[in-house]
Image 1 (cartoon, rainbow, N blue to C red):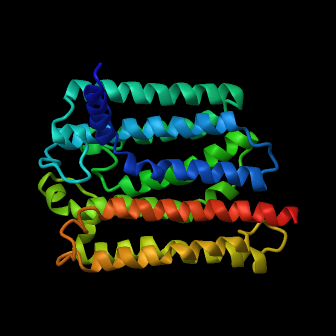
Image 2 (image 1 turned 135 degrees about the vertical axis):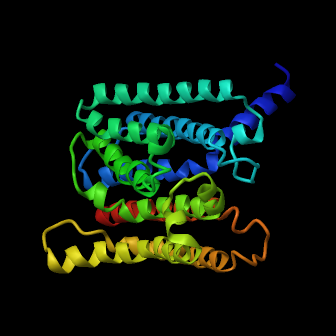
Length: 318
């Protein structure tokens, strides 16, 4: 295969997978794994972490292409946008797309099965619901999760609390409420990514009789909802620090080092400004690409949260 054909192959599948969205699913895995090391009293296994990380990458990639297939088949994605996948752009065929879906879901499932064998069959209780949510997010016609205003809940569970809990369990072999509760701020930002996408697509979704939270809320209320989603995580972190610390002595509270997430506040303010100016944007694609920009904010917030855990670990050693 020539270099040009190799680069073309990589490019078309890079576009089809939509890697800009992958931090939404992989960040909870990173966070949950580090959380397990710092608070779970377990030895960190790099092999298990990599298996969990790439398992999530494969499953999310498959879900992205599957979503692309059904949105195109149902007439929701007709024209390419800067964040469109390969099917609507016409760079991969339906046959190729379905093969990729089977391949990615297959590889992700194999890694999940191996981890369950290495750790505990209980991991199935976390992994199987996540797999089903990924499959039926758009598959299932009018009963799919996305089309019945359940998409926000689906990504909150799959790319938030289940990802964090699963990563914790892989490292510790035990269940805990800590990775679930402490992942909520990050999971809320994952909803913000999806909402920005659905907010942009309100008109086409309504034409296709697709009901998302955004289409049900309408434009003005979608703005309010988006504002809540991008700013609420700061207050959630504050609550997770202070409420257990003052009201429930003896119970684990989120370390004060999590105050460093405030460094991402300028990004949130910038996103809010783009949302406010959606009808007269400074840059024509500001609102179109709001979901991608929100994904970058989610990544920074997640990395800062993970950094807070590492900082707490260092403080404990001093």
